Image (cartoon, rainbow, N blue to C red; front, side, top):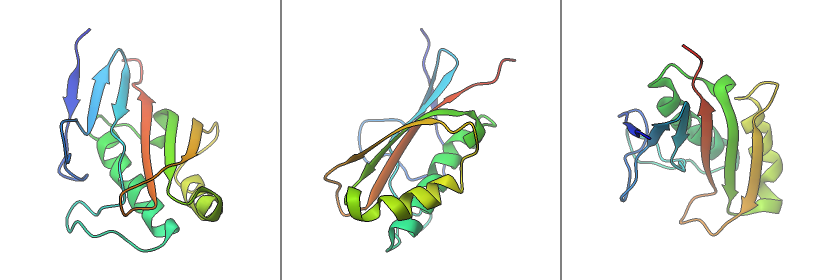
Length: 127
């Protein structure tokens, strides 16, 4: 199986030994992205603003291969404050995706000074 790294300046740079995304077997797998603005490094304050920035970061990696959230089949979401922030996160997330929605797992996690982190798996269209 051949792996192909996916990289863009429009999403935050990796802070460790990982890729922003990897193509493998007809799928694009993204890293978990936080809410850092890739240009400034700044993190918004609210769960809604952070979720929107995370989704823009994920979209930047998807768009390298012409993909959108319509191609996403699976999302994994980590929330620092699961019970408090779920409604605001979910409303913002829903504004980026469409039916049929991707399958999704949302869990509470101990995150480093952010409220949300999301990674996705997207199916490449048959060509």
